[in-house]
Length: 495
Image (cartoon, rainbow, N blue to C red; front, side, top):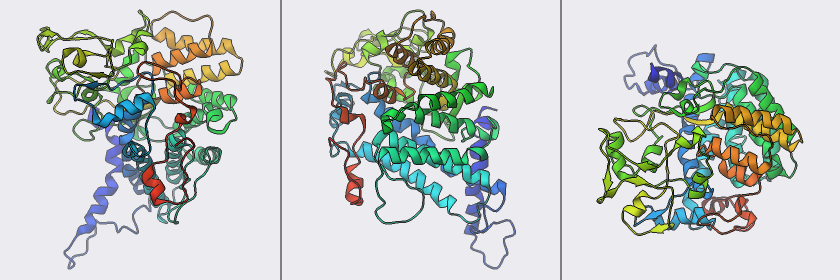
């Protein structure tokens, strides 16, 4: 049932691949009555829906791309443990905000090409004369706008790729890209579905568009210099008041291996360990010997952990603190584990970014179990779907918009709805710093932190292993590979 539900979209959408593969018939003496020629496929709503499958599959890379870049924030560290995770100091440069266009081109170009390759595939289908269904075309345009939003957020001055072809497309300002994304989403909005779940699980409906607009508006001052707090609030109102979503009583159920049933998740990337791999946070964060705890087929990689100060910001009694693994670890049969003769105890403290090989280095840093760690799996990948948008975030975005609009009472009400679910005490006063902290507790490792820190003016301050950084680091450099390919592109200031 789980796989059936989770992969329903992919089964429907990947149907096009199966239909198109039938064209490889080489027996020209027969007439294949069960094959649809390429130039005719897409003439019915069912076929048009099937064409969406490969276009949504690219969202499967969302987790991996964002997981790496989360290291630029105050919530994640990938320290060097002996020779492990040295990687030519790439993780150190990200942490210290000392990345360079030349030294880190692979990461920046990876994000850039992931987005534009997806956009190109969408444009190819939008250019298909056989696709006439307005709803299908609107959904494709919304997905295309979403990828442009990612590019805007990371690189700011990018290309608007709204058509196929053209040599050396021109670069636009952040304000121009913002306006285009807003226009696209507003134009297609009436034609998007209001259906949630089922065949629309993992797809763009009206509420995913609302959430994208809410993110666009809450960051409008960063992107364009002009705030749009009221517009952000209005989009959150639509989502919250729709009745289509509900806060899960159990916070962690939104991230379980069965989280496709969550009523809180607005947009999630469907993963399946055997049929659509790619979600492997367990491997990135757990210690090598954690294999004995969770019976994973291979030893994890012992990399990602949370920053000490960030871990310590979680208060006792807040059940969200249980997202972190600390303390003595045990084998699957309950025996206490040791690492090189020393008790296998995860400690929140990370004594240095670069540590000599040994148990101290290997056990440093609290590990993440926000996404339920799958036991006895047959693969390094997990079944959890990765959550991009959820209702809890919408409540906090609305709280922020209200607070910035001077509606503090309304903001406190929304924050306390979230805190009540977390089992922690309600707040009676609220500041921007307090709201940023609340977003950290609620949204940790959901990859909103970089955006949040920039919006709250905290991204450039000093924290563990990082001195204060210049403001130009708020956006990444245009990839060197792209500058070499397109003479119309200019590097972002400071690089």
